[in-house]
Image 1 (tube, one colour):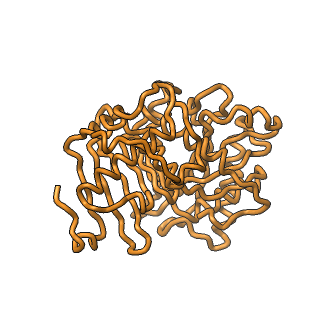
Image 2: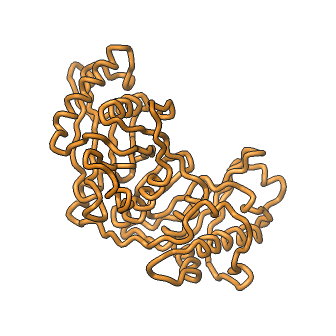
Image 3: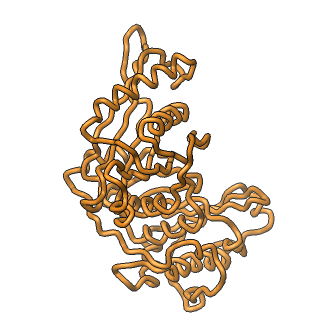
Length: 347
């Protein structure tokens, strides 16, 4: 690999692809310094939820879409037996908003309708409530005919939620702390407003901090797709010069590095996560003379999923979805904020 010259440092983006991973004792050294990890857990259990195989087709609907994440506080008075009623009420709400001049999408002029359904099986324990899937369909006029298409979709879930918190909730509340939205921001806002008014909850944007992205990189390093061999990609951002640095790693090399660090089959420790990232930093510095530790990790992409610091997530593989949702649920439980009114961040 060639050394990064000052001239090449001015490029908007550059990447590195590992050919082989042969960690040396110099690279694999314990990191003893103050880092951003002091705000996170010291260790986490490795997910072993094994989502039902019979739910694969339904879960497949969630894959390969760009989702925007939101926190949701516990829903008051929500009932799975009233999903048809909620569908009708949300449809009426959207129609009312459209009469006020709120456009859903260019080209959509006719009535829109909402549909609530259960996303059965998307949970880790019997204590987790069932996930809920929401679709907004709209009719569009195309060549003197009317076609119906899904213009917005979203889902709420709780996977391996904190048992203490779930059991402490009054029976009138159901906790679905994660909301995933895909579609026009105006529709996300309308759905969010309706949910807040109907269930007395609060919804807010869900950014992902750099230290949590680092945990994702480590936890997903040894997860492989059966059909597609996807490179691990990490992106760092350097605010003063508006530079994005991209690092591409062959999945087998990432797994080899992680296996040389990770020892316990049941849990991952913060020391292992720090050592994994420190090894990547050292490799990059040797070849390019750039200290990534001074930058901000903004994106992680593996065979499992892609996550961005602004709260965007894309799921690639239903086999390892249990490596993604429990961690996000944990973060949501920690970061949910109770507020008395709608936040303008639902966009």
